[in-house]
Length: 257
Ligand code: NAD
Image (cartoon, rainbow, N blue to C red; front, side, top):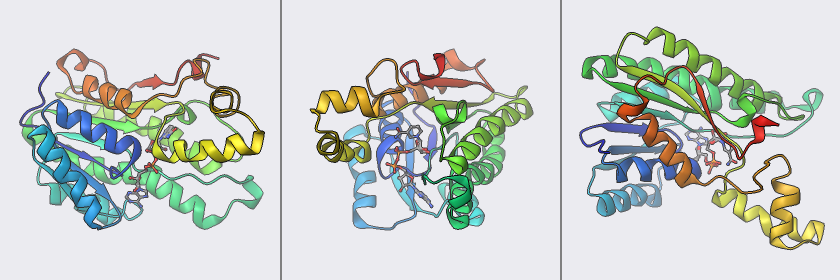
């Protein structure tokens, strides 16, 4: 399938899942706008690499997704936005009575409110173009809970709810809004935790992955950033034109338990 002529803005895409999604959208022909809150040479180099290898236009735009105005400005600077992937996210783990208020506010802002601002700014562009796709990267934690992650769980459930509302507001237009709910995904951040966990539990890599890290993931396999990119590309395809207001789990069976 080709997404040639479409522009995709992916928030939080200088690493991990966002970067993987950007690569797959560019491989499918879309021009991509990468984003994070930093403005380093390597951020812009990632965009150059995608452009060179896929022959699409790729740019990097700095914007802090914890700030509403910068979220809206990212979309304005992109100039057009046919595909919006709300992916930026952070985590903090603590019991609710010890949860730092600044962490609560940052997680709600980056993981949830940013999607409100970017979607509000992008929908008029999608309407003008006569086509649009909103893809929110929620989580298995947008559908289920774990202890000590109140802010993350509240934000991800909020994103799932927001997705349904946006889908209803655009239901009679050629625009869809859906949420992808990944289980545990093998990102560089997760990969980096494996050696320490092996040492802590005195286990080999395979045992640590299956028994400790993927305890709740029945497949005992990580999802990959390429699979999340592929799911995003599918949601942008004509086959997915009537898929709206729903969630797609990429979680190895986590939410079936
Ligand atoms: P990651 O840390 O590699 O990526 C997070 C991205 O968000 C980075 O590009 C980071 O620079 C960006 N970001 C953070 N704060 C930002 C800010 N203020 N403004 C702009 N960008 C900001 O982690 P990841 O695992 O790739 O996570 C991506 C998304 O996927 C998150 O929303 C996360 O909650 C979700 N998710 C991840 C997993 C997993 O197992 N890795 C599972 C389910 C959901």
